Length: 350
Image (cartoon, rainbow, N blue to C red; front, top):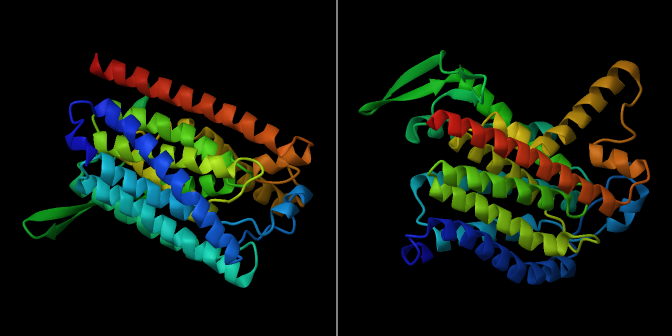
């Protein structure tokens, strides 16, 4: 492990995680793409999607497999994994496995929809709940939600204590419910964002770099390394996912990245700020919710097409223009969120 060589340079370890994951992703992605092509494993495009997307039919998918392999390898290579690290990686990998099963279902049945929404939600809620319980009981995460400059909301007022061996297992129901909504919401928000070449990879990369900085400032080196590795894997993947994409990450990647973002927010106590940092993902998810709700009530659409990036495609923007502008918006959201976090932490120290 490289951490033993550079233990006195923790900042370098975080940057090294970015480089390691990026290099590993770039090394293993080409043979994976060749394997997928030779096996005729490709993306199934929505029939009701933009016409320009029809040419994407058959493009290799499940690039998230290599991304996750690169992340795990980089974390094990660079850091000194703790129990906290293994739990974080387990949540990410289990969600990735759920996405992989979903991707495989789409390919086998040759349709754009894989698992039923209920099946995916059940799996995501199970992973989120398990992570929340472990975080509270083993990582000393307080069942609170800090809102910088305003207040800290205590969601531990309704807690059940269950005797377990020599100790007790705490179940703060309101906080667990909040964690479930946050993690599952981010999972699906990132998944909805993954609709254009380079969009999800680029925006998640920006957000993960900011989360790595937050984790590092919170003296959480291993979560910072995991976040940095996720950013590096996105960079390496983006080389092959840039327009016109040679491969898509699939639900394997997008769901896992969303879960990773949510789990990092819990560990760094940025459960509220992450909504600002990942503001683009929130906007994408809200566009779908608003579209569905309004259409059911009135029979009319608010957007030309949801998620939001497709609306701008329908307005005549090129795919690359939408992607680059959304990267910029994501960067702005991440910068504002980090600024709020940093200012709040400074006031807390003072």
